[in-house]
Length: 454
Image (cartoon, rainbow, N blue to C red; front, side, top):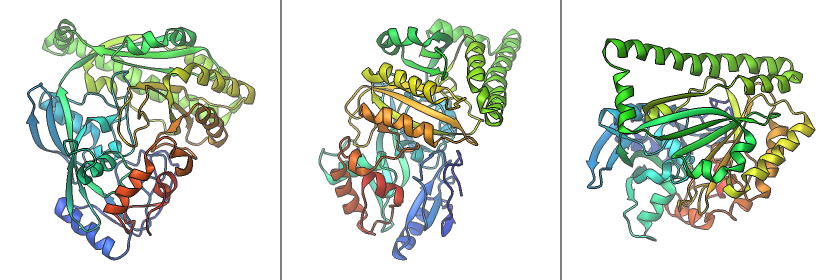
């Protein structure tokens, strides 16, 4: 088996795909009784060895779909989703009910269980990661017991502490079978994509981030240009206009044109042409500065209105390795300056742009945005090209300002220094109570969270 980015390969002792929660519980109990380790995998979109096991490997694709919808007085709803549901499936199911996730990342291939367990996030100065939208979980422990834990449990209670580690804890307290999410009425976004000078963004960073519902940017190394993405709630008039463009004879024609433009932008320019650029970079690394300059100059502006999940999600066809760090937002400008300086001095060939996103402070135990306004800086490298030197240099820059690595993306950090950022003693206490034999551990969780009993 291997990850989507081809960064980790492994061979479990056996694999299983349970058809329902009862079968999942029986498989976990049998494996634990036999002394096997147990891990689950979704789409393999983690670049770290988070899903690796030498024992039983569980695929949860059959545990898919929505179980229940409970409307709330404030217009939100609590939706219970089976853990193996892929995000693209969930988005479609919610849309059919007139609902939506409050915020999303830019990839929708992951399972909901994998996405929340590794700290997947989107962008938005007032919004947290996917784990902040979780209100309850069902998790199968090593005895095969299905435990329920919710955010409504009393602070400090065993149920509440189990909830904290189950909603974002790398699957170390059991296998999620279902997740309850707080979702909102469906909404549309007005997307604006424009190339800006990088200094224009950084000079007005607070206005850029705080003045938009969702703001992000892509900066091409070796240039001072960035592609800015600003997504804001569309007005009723904007939604009506674009809805009309999708219906009727004239609307069908306009809709076909919009889909053709989307296909051109997303598949041909963003993926097809980008694949060619990266293959050229792989074959002739010395061309990278010129390739990045061409890519930066080729950026065009576009604006459109669409349902939220269609705006949040970007297609990713070109395979890459990735490292992402959560930084104090105030450190962003200096960090990018240091990264730019290293890239220019080293002449390291990097044909991928650097991605920058933002999040609000939250109180989730293992959230990378825990307790502070956050800027996420992600560095990428084309999968066939070496990435270690680049990532090591970037990690030193990020770590120097108190950066925290994304749990599902490449890094070299350990529990010894991550304990400065997270309540790892509390996490260890909950893990020891729920999984005293270490059924759900692996080498990666030992490294980043600390070991449990073997």
